[in-house]
Amino acid sequence: MKAQEFIKEVDNSDRGMNKYGLAARNKDGKFYSYRHGKLTGTFNNIQDLQRHQHELIKDESVNEGASMLPYFKQDEKTWSFPDAWAKDEALDTPYMSNMSMRQFLDTLGYDSDFEQSPPVDAKEFIGRTTQWLQKNIDNPSKQIPTTVDRSGGGATMIGGGKPEGWDNRQVKHHNELARKILTKYPEVTHFGFN
Figure 1 (tube, rainbow, N blue to C red):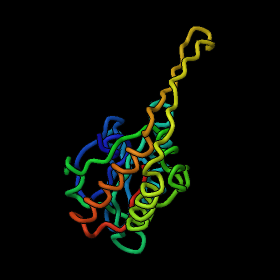
Figure 2 (figure 1 turned 180 degrees about the vertical axis):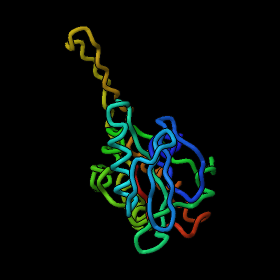
Figure 3 (figure 1 turned 60 degrees about the horizontal axis):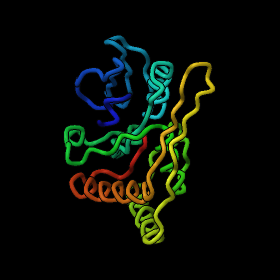
Figure 4 (figure 1 turned 90 degrees about the vertical axis):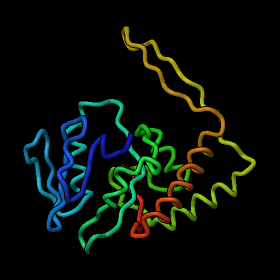
């Protein structure tokens, strides 16, 4: 699943809504947010659009998440992503829960508050993930066991664990995807996590 199916799709076309009824349009350097076909706000940058759309649905999904999205600056104020990438299933980036994305970014030394963070330089991301993989070649990340909490007054809360080496596999996969995306879409300069 692509991240734009979750929250935000920013482009110059009318591709329709995601599963939350959200859509966005980038026109003349402004970002327009729509929900169920009605305008919900106009923004000068993609970060404000993302915050706005996140606020619109924050109470509707406990299973929110994010993906790595390729961006480039269309002009001084406007971030965009390659239109063809949105339909390029071979370069689909993994959709992760918010907690998993925070852990992934923290593992790499990035700010884990991805909702508030700007996109990171694409070449720097490739360099950082490559260095992390080299440093951890014989050091798989530890297994995190699944937890079960039945103290919630009848509700059972299950915390998902992670198998040994999960971090290594995620970093390797994102590194490979980032390289392939830059090769196929050389206009990409940054990766955002939304």
